[in-house]
Image (cartoon, rainbow over all chains, first blue to last red; front, side):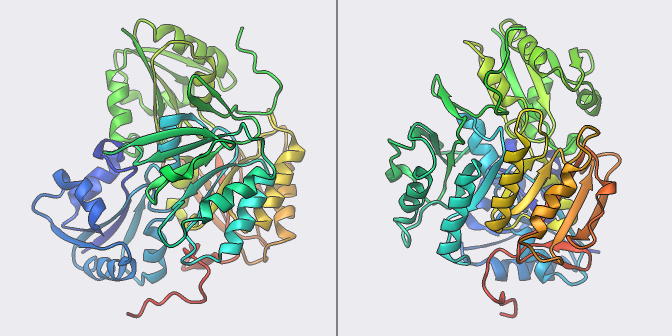
Length: 244
Length: 244
């Protein structure tokens, strides 16, 4: 009797995976994922059957995973949380009577936030700037509404070669409502090899450091920078009372 | 030389903690947290010094953690992700020259989502209905803007004795813009003892099952229920092509 684990491996390094995710990978006979993610967990998958495919191969990958899971224990892996822009959705859309378990992980915005400070301490949203399956007008409308609502905004997939200017257009929408001193962080390869971190303000934001693997976090009206740490207070009271 | 680990322990059970979070707890001499959360990790903290305080004791807890971390290795724990409505913000606001490391975890909306299906597969936001530190008018405005922007909405702290009607008021705001068939999930005690799950639509939503420990997830315009699983597609194309 087979089973399919849909695993969010967290930001990438094995130590930021949950204990349950690690056990499920160890328990699986077959590992399926995007080549680059498979490489991150090499020590865990020695001797296992591996199917890796390129970036655009999601649907064949899911089909293969479901097929094989009828007979074998199979793990299909995403970075971050499998349920946020990961593989959980496609698998459940395509599933018939296969046995599927979703194992959540640390999503990319949480990983990025932990490196720059505590930017996500109040109401926050995740917006992907990828316009492959979402109209760009809807993405821009969403950014505008999120800014008006004073949400902290985490941008996933902020930039690619096919849309080099969308990020700066989106930042211009934010500038209509939010102060120029609002902190903006860029984290590339959060908590894995090649990590890079930048803390800007809206006024001096430089989007040339951003690539597809970055997360961009824009603070709310209360966010501030203290000793190069990006902090959003947990509320809107005038002053927190720390001297008890 | 001491150190302070600010740890997001994930939904609660030890297996949903990251390997890094578990190691940091094991490495710590002192464990600080809300009594109920400390109880969840009893097997990890035998023989360690423990300071636990009630729900409202956040500021004294942070002060104690920072003080002790000058000499000792200290872990202050939150459920979920320490950086999303957790302890990371207060610690960094109050910190002087203490050494602090934030260790991210699986946030409550990811944990709840993994149980009901894949509701968070597109742009999504987290909104806390707690009005202790946030004006209720701003919370309602935020819900309205998020609904207009077709965000999937995860509600944290959806209900308490002091505000029994806010959740139903907020759902009425959502109903102004979103179809009555939109899925709404309630997950109580996600991935820990006492887990309960309910899948409703906006039309038949029953808020009597919701308490302070629940997460409520409201789908976007594309979300649907299939075999009692809550799915949001990854995009807005008319039809995903699964028959390759």
